Image (cartoon, rainbow, N blue to C red):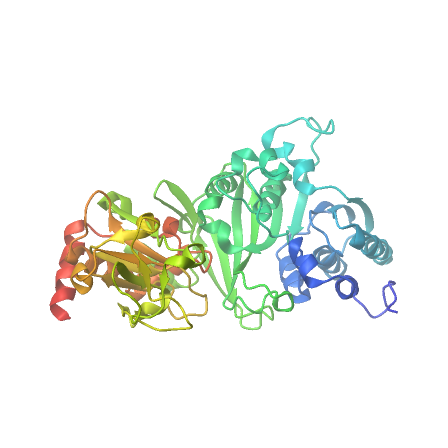
Length: 505
C-alpha cells in the first residue's frame, strides 16, 4: 500500500502526481473519461507554471478543476525555488469528485507544511461544488450565494479543465446562455468564468483543446473572451498524440496565458508563440507576433489565428489581401447528406446487383491524388445508393462541385484536400450521393461552371492555402465555418485560374 504522505525526496509536483496515479489505479479509465477528467503530465505542469508571474508578496490563486493539485503543485514548487521573500498565498480549489478530495486535502496539508519550511504562508479552501454553476454570476450578473457585491478576484488562475460536450438545456449552458452557440463544451465555460474572476492584470494559464480558436460553437465565447483577456503566450504541440498519451486523448491541445485587460488592447503588444514536438519541450521554438496578427476577422466572426514562423506571417499577409470569402462570391459549403447507417436498406455494394435507379456514393477513400475515382471497393463499404423517395433528400443533383475531405489529422502532410466533381464525368447519372465525411462547395441559387470549380479546387490545393488553413483551423475536422472564412481572390481571377488548370490537364 502506497503511503499518502509526501516522501522526503519528493517535490510537491512529484507528490501530487503520485497521488494522481494512486487515484487512477482505483478508477476505471472509462469512468474518468466520462467526467472529462484527464490528468496533467508533470512536464506540462512545470511549463505552465513557468509562465506565471509570482512577484507579489501576497498572491491569490484559483485552480477550478484541481484533481490531486498537480498544477497548483507546479506553482508552489516555482515559489519555493524562485521566490526570495516570504509570500502569503491564498488558494481556492474546486473539485467535485468525492473520491479524489481526500487526496487533494492530503496534498494541500503537505504543501502548507513544505511552504512553511521555506517561510511562506498558505491558506486554502476546497470547494466540492460545481465551478461553473456556482460562479456563473461573475458573467451573467445573477445574484447567487449573496456574493454578487463581494466578488473574490484572483492573481493567477491555472487549470486543465474537464472536457465534454453539454446539451443546450444543461444547467451549465442555461447559467451561461450569453456564451452558448450550438452545442457547448464545458471547458470553454471554465475559461470564461476564470477570466471574469481575475483581478486587474490577473493571469490565467490553461491547457485546453484548440477548438475554441475557430470552432463555430465557440463564436460567442471568442468574442467575449478577447474583449476581457489579452493573450500573451500560446504554446502548440507539433504532435497531438503525446500530450495526454497515457489518457488516450487525441484532441489537439494548446497552452495559453492571458492577462485581464478590461477591453483595453494595444494591437502592437507582442504575443509569444512557442512550439514543441511533445511534452518534453526539448525542441522548444518561439516567435513573437503582434497581437493584431492573431485576431482574424472574417465572415462576421472572430478567429484566433496562430502563426508559428516568419513564413506563416508572410502567408497571412499575402492571403489576407484577397478581398473575398465564399459567401461574398455566392459560394456555399455543405456537408455530405448520406449517413450510411441511417439508410442501410438503400445501400448498394456490388455493380452486379440490379443497377436500375442507383447512383454513385462517394466516400473519403474515393480521393486518389486530388482526383475522384469511382467505383472504389474498400473495407466492405457501399459503392452506390438507391435513388427513390426515401433517398430524395440525401442526393445532390448532377452538376459541378468541389469536394473536400471533412476529416484529416494533424500529422497528415495536408489538412485541405480538394477534388472536382464534374457533371461530364458522371453524365450517366442524374444525381450523386456524398457520404457525411465529405464537404462540398456549390453555388447558391445556381451551378458552378467548370472553370469556377477547377479554380476553387486549385486555390484550396495550394500549399500556401493549406498552411493558412492550419493556422486557422483548431481541430482535425474541416468545417464549413473555417472554409467560409478563407480569403479568396476576385471571381474573374478564380475563373482564370480554373481556365489555366483546365488547359494544363
